[in-house]
Amino acid sequence: MNTKLKHQSVADDPIERHFYEIIQLIGEDPEREGLIETPKRIAKMYREIFSGLHENPEEILQKTFPAEGTKDIVIVQDIPFYSVCEHHFVPFFGKVHIGYIPNERIVGLSKFARLVDVFARRPQVQERITNEIVNTIQKVVNPLGVICVVEAEHMCMTMRGIKKPGSLTRTIAKSGVFDSDELPNYYEERFFKMLNKEI
Image (cartoon, rainbow, N blue to C red; front, side):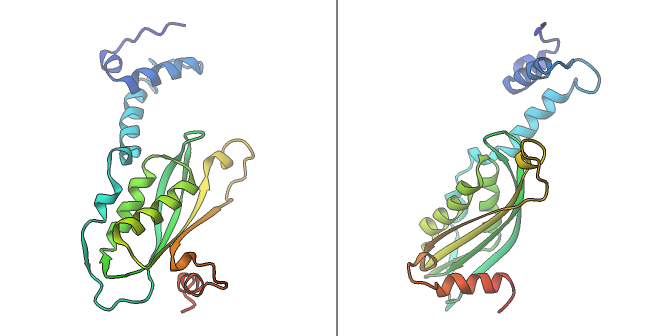
């Protein structure tokens, strides 16, 4: 197989160079019209969808405000996200629901969406991204408790392997008052009632 690169720009970029070779290894011609710019596009896309590797999620939550008597659960729900499964490097995507009970400080609501983006823009597994969101909010903001639910469809189950399109995976992580051993947990129940608009 001829792996000599015809385009200097491809040779200069390691992601482009390796993807050029991958195209050859699967039996395609990286020099044909439909594929000639593909290594460059892939390199650009990877830098975008994996940009969270170069961001500090804790910095997003540094700006806080006085809670001013807020004592109930604050919920930001239906935050859309796209990530890449680290096992097969295909997408998984869905929604994130975050609830927290402020202690002395609150966070601008848009910061939760940014936090989700930072963790999603990395090679990921759903269980880890769920825990990372909770652990970071708890560490930086120090609320009375945090709860996070992630619902996602995984393309590694849809387009390959078992091939079950439409199946959803739900994960949950909790801290503080949401993670109490007391059953039933009042705060967790209230979160899900609010999430389902029962309150």
